[in-house]
Image (cartoon, rainbow, N blue to C red):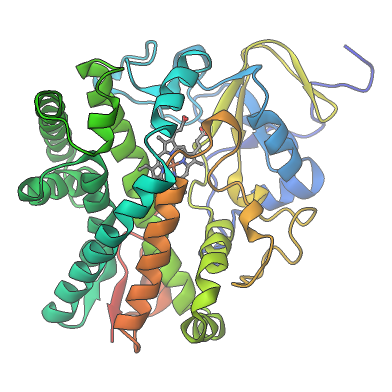
Length: 408
Ligand code: HEM
């Protein structure tokens, strides 16, 4: 070890969990911002007692996320957060076949290549009109039911679930079943038993769907993968896409709307200028960074020197993305929501490196069409409760709002 490389911090390790800024529901936890200012790679005591590392600096995050000496595999590391790696039965073993988000290269590379071949510009273009239709249908239903509405239940949760149906080639007749199960899994009002039953129903459904696609391939993602993968792999891939793409997009739709309603001047600018939508989506992704903690977690496969510190083999590293995306060394006035920010797209809210979000183009399409259609359909959209009464998903792995009561 070189003299200037240390594994020790002068202070007590930072601790989890952390809460977002009590003064602003969109700002990162103040502790994370403090660490970034003083020690962007710092010791962190995890809830189970083991001590690892917390990254809050933008450049450090990119370095670590693109370094193959760090593993993503839950079975090779301590749990970053207790709930983050829980699997059915509580067993932590090697990733199940097809569960590529938890694999390292070269295992990961094989699946990722096959999937990238399916998430093509062509397929996304084909999906776009259906996504618009799904969004408009939901907004029509919300308008018909009349104000007030909970935007989470009426719009934000169902839209991504229905879009994944389209992506996987779930027949239209089964949409309602599919949506009901996925929403039960993430709805805070479901009991654990209800959520588990819904998950099993969905896994069973996806297994049958894969068998049907094998018998009768169509022009959809699962059919496109059939020649290369077996049924278990395909079923698990479908589940990964659902898990990764549902709550994330739903929370961006709802929390993004909440943020827009709390920034009336920015909202007026967005309403007035269609061409702002693309950068607005990037800026909302950066400003809100909903994967707050427990998202990208890694462990060192051997001793690694980064930023003048020595991360020892086996130690856990967790990324504080909300602080990373507000690093003043990367973004000017990072605490300000500026929907025309030209470099907003450099945020790391979709991660970085080989595991960078596979569904990011799809998420962008959903968010662009979703915000635009919502604002056009409801020109007088506003909160139906004082902003302090909107319940925040403080302790959830994906940040957002549990409910967003709106009226118009
Ligand atoms: C990976 C965020 C939407 C599928 C990731 C990662 C982040 C992320 C931060 C990297 C995790 C890591 O490095 O450990 C988001 C956000 C979304 C979103 C904020 C919505 C706004 C979607 C959608 C899909 C999707 C719509 C699919 C339909 C995936 C998959 C991975 C992933 C499969 C794992 C990729 C891999 O390991 O190679 N996402 N995501 N995501 N995302 Fe997304």
